[in-house]
Length: 165
Ligand SMILES: [Zn+2]
Image 1 (cartoon, protein in one colour):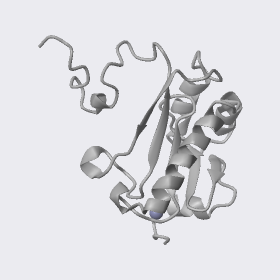
Image 2 (tube, rainbow, N blue to C red; image 1 turned 30 degrees about the vertical axis):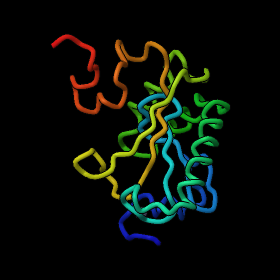
Image 3 (cartoon, rainbow, N blue to C red; image 1 turned 90 degrees about the vertical axis):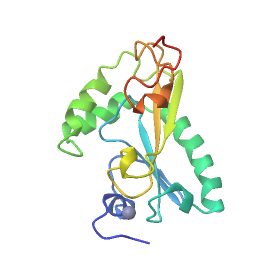
């Protein structure tokens, strides 16, 4: 199902999408063009659906396999080369600042120490494109002063539940 005016539906149809990592029967994976960290990737179902509860059981199964493939790709790709290409010809007007940060990251092209996975499942949760997308965000020891709480930090100051209050 293709939805008009949906970036992701357009990208799925675009055989030469520069940011693409892989495509399979039901999903496309690509590098986020405004990466939070080097290797930040998105996995998008080919079907235009907004919420994760609309994934079929077949899609769930392949999503898991796709995530594993994407991680393998992140860990084996020359990301400096990827982001240099993005800097030479930015995918969006917002990309340059993020790609510059990624390319000078002290741990680019080393195996991440951890990953955050997540979806913004609704507008109030921060979703800006209403086509489901799964984020894979590589994390590195020391990339935040205190990463305690991980995704709990989507609301500032609420991440670390161990802090004295
Ligand atoms: Zn779409």
